[in-house]
Image (cartoon, rainbow, N blue to C red; front, top):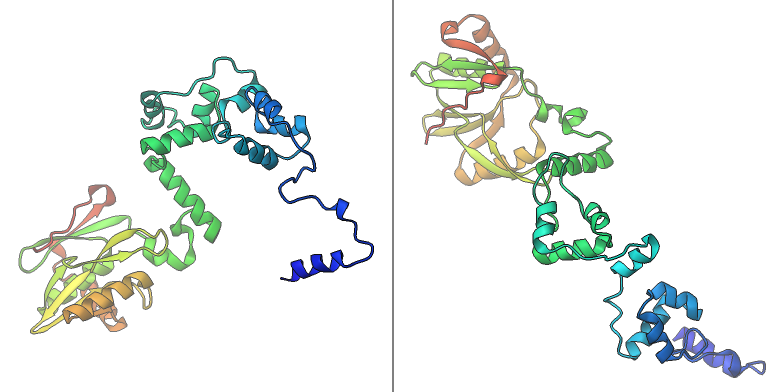
Length: 312
């Protein structure tokens, strides 16, 4: 409304000159010969036409479409690349050739769209369009996915891996050894840290019924956005009371995403989810240092990982 009022005001101005205004459908201030434009466009690109006729590319597109010419065929075509590189006999790869280059992981790595375009002398957007039509665009190898994830993490946090962040070390730190243990009921377990082993010894010393990594809770990793599964460290049964206990060497070390999902699942199942307390850590350490059931404990290197036994 304001612009229209301004134009109306110009018309009432005594110094208004209508010859200075160009109709809206002629932006280049001249009429183009459509016959000459169509003939020139056959062997030239849109940019060449714009330079030759002294107007913009959108103007060329508009006139060609008015004349019934499909300009989308020539956008990002082999013609544009052939003109600059003097490529003769440019052709598109077949579906089998494209799949053979893009999908298998050769020794030097997969071919990307730009490499394939350079090989055939066409524009990379042509290759990407063919990959999309074949349903191949977007597929990446595990190495490419890992590199992309590390780059995104670096842009967000300034480090390439979560293990390099101080605020998530508790989530990513792993022990260099494993501890195999045979409990008082003759069951074989393999723990990932001495803290878990000490807590298991404490439960056996107190005569509690317990299971290791028996319950699983799905959750969404806040760092990568992926769906993961969180195994509760210990399920402790004391009569009618059931507790899920996460073992950490200090308080407030359980990652927030795991806490929220585990607490929600525990509330739905009528159990209690918590971390081990300071008192339990001191008692478990004293039981471990006392040599209780030391003959049933074996220290294993990480290379000999044994998955813990889970009770169905």
